[in-house]
Image 1 (spheres, helix red, strand yellow):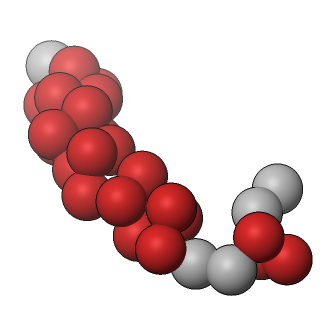
Image 2: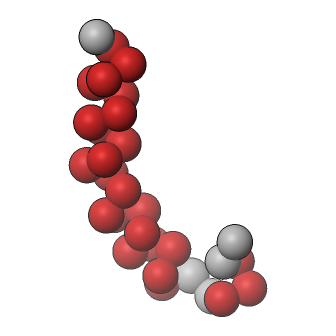
Length: 30
């Protein structure tokens, strides 16, 4: 299913996104 493909893609991209979030100032943290 395309939905599962998107989920796997997001899971693969999550680590990179988390690293970017960790590099951003605390003011931007949600």
